[in-house]
Length: 179
Image (cartoon, rainbow, N blue to C red; front, side, top):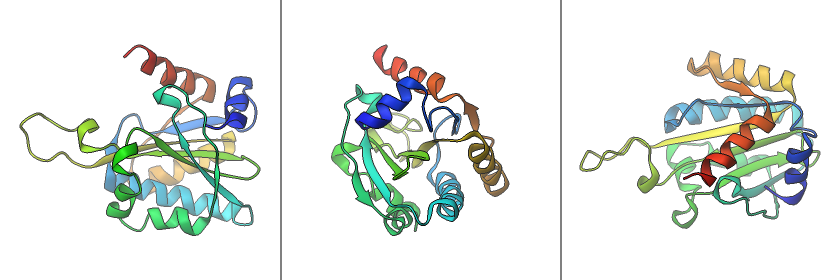
């Protein structure tokens, strides 16, 4: 998160006055990729004329605030060309960070996380190589969140969790404080 999103999250201000949608748990990378393609198609139709930004979101790892950099829709789409490109978008030294994309009006906040093998929830000690997985969340106005969740359900059969952003982010931050 950056300073402005942190302020908006604390004040329940746009887009944190809408909904946050997310899978109930990590999903196989293939299903996450299908979900993110559905999300990106819908978001690009709505926000194609808006500049896009990217930042590293350390919210779950102590809340360090970071600065956004200019991104593009082409950059976002480059992450979604294959499971391998999505996996490789997360450098080995920052696997704990979520990468976030948002437009200049901050109408949505899309965060993506692909854990490394050492953090993979599907890993079993001494077992075979774990299934690559990922998760994401998107915070935006309620009508858009509902539309995105329906598109993902149609594409993947996955029912996303919908909740208030304040409850979601408080739960995410508090769970890291107790570990």
